[in-house]
Amino acid sequence: MMEQQDQQEQQVVAKLEIPQTTAAAAELSTADADRVFDAQNVSIYYGSFRAVTDVSISIYQNEITAFIGPSGCGKTTVLRTLNRMNDLIATARVEGDVHYRGASLYAKTVSPTAVRRRIGMVFQKPNPFPKSIYENVAYGPRINGVKGKSRLDEIVEHSLRQAALWDEVKDRLSKSGLGLSGGQAQRLCIARTLAVEPDVVLMDEPCSALDPIATGRIEDLMQEIKARYTIVIVTHNMQQATRVSDRTAFFSVLRDEKPGRADTRTGVLVEYGATAQIFGDPQDERTKAYVTGRMG
Amino acid sequence: MAVTTNQSAVDLREPSGWRRAKNQFATGAMWFTFACMLVPLGFVLVTVVAKGASTITWQFLTNSTIPPNILPANIGGMGAAVVGTLEITGGAAVIAIPLGILGAVYLNEYGGNRPLARVLSFFSDVMTGVPSIVMGLFIFTIWVLHFGYSGLAGSFALACLMLPIVIRSSYEMLRLVPDSLREGSYALGATKARVTLTVVLPAAIGGIVSGALLAVARAAGETAPLLFTILTVEATNPNLFSGANTALSTQIWVNAQQPYAGAVARGWGAALTLIAIAFILMIVARLVTARFARYSR
Image (cartoon, rainbow over all chains, first blue to last red; front, side):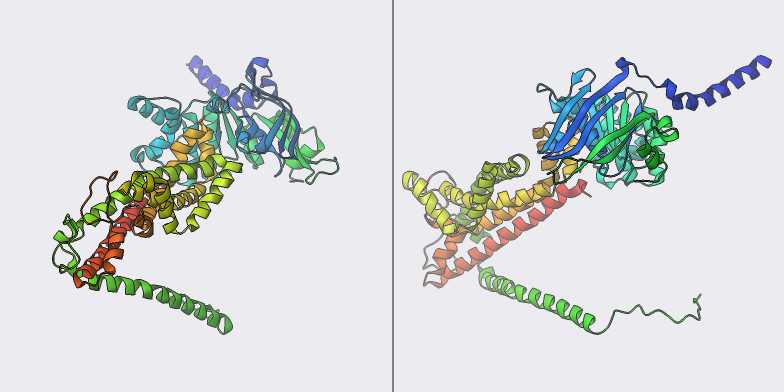
């Protein structure tokens, strides 16, 4: 009788401890083996405009890393550098080193296609293809060579379940993906990204077009899948960063002092650390001003 | 239950005076120009139906040889010209549509600001303005003079005419495909060719097909490019690749000049048949667009 009660109490304590341990800054790994991205002195240019200057940041496995900062600080630009999406902009150029699991992302022999196959991306505006819900999810596996209906069915169901969308769409898989609500469409895009079993999921303000309920769903979803993926999220919403992320990077805009440039704004990484520390005990005055709402 | 209130009601009527007058004037002007535009269209349709409908019979549409001009309208028909128009226009479509779509894909997806893309775009715009008879002369000098008259030569001439239309309409459709779709595909590890084939083209295919069918309808009615290329004979020639051929448009041209009532009546019949073919193509274009658009809403 006594023993049973003890066990129950221990279970309750264990449950309570879970959020505490994940929130504790000391628990975050800094081991080299857990390092997914390692960017050193990265500057990113669009033509002659230097959008981002000298960013050095390490991103760790199975964590959610949030990029926050005012508009124009280059957080999306840095994010798009991590899976070479910036290659699609003809004038974009990256200086410095970006390593992904030991390989240099911008080496000449690296194929951007192979990079994006491992490092998926969810965009600000849900962008389902004008195809059926099923085809939206099956698209990635198909172009990566998965064949056979039963295998694809399995992947589609599994991905939609992971994205917490299965129950809502299982009866209308053949209907257009464009007929979904904003929140559903964004979860469809997440399912589509997960269907190719990426290593990393980059999210560029994935909830900015969604209402709070849909946002909550996607945040829960991120927590559920982070055991299997590494997630980097750009967000304008600081509450969201505190709710979901393990680490936070605060970017800001700096005036570039070099004369003769048309646009002298450039983004810099101001402070990077455990989310609890960035919001609870920011070391830089600019971070402090931003997270307390005095600026930006 | 009526809502009772002792407030004085706010005035929510259309603002009066000058603003309302301007609005009414603009609306009136719009209706007027719309009606003006309908007048010639109505005249053409009414005249062609009135003068051509009586000759249209099953025999008229399928008769294999166009009879001598002096025979009355109730004898013989334009079957040979229907076959010729379908063959020649079909051949032109097979040449011009794939080339045109590929050209548009190159311009929008691959070309960017490259010199070749700029040159292509410029010349396709120039080609749009080239008189159709010049296309006929062009094919006459480079093909007919060496290989003789044939339906194929007519197809070439019509293809020259269709090509810039197909390029332009497909290009506009591809431009409408949002970049976010391309990015979505790239982010899954797709190559550029994959993105184009599996996302961009399917998203634009409805508009591309309808643009292409409109180009076909336009080409089916062209006379000038065929004058120097198919020779316009009276007998059905099912072989597109050799021998002189015939077409509805050139038959209209030939028959309308005759002093014989029978020939002129057959000319009107051919005109009505041609309009009907163009009309059917327009309807097919609509249906195809709707069919392909089923996932886009």
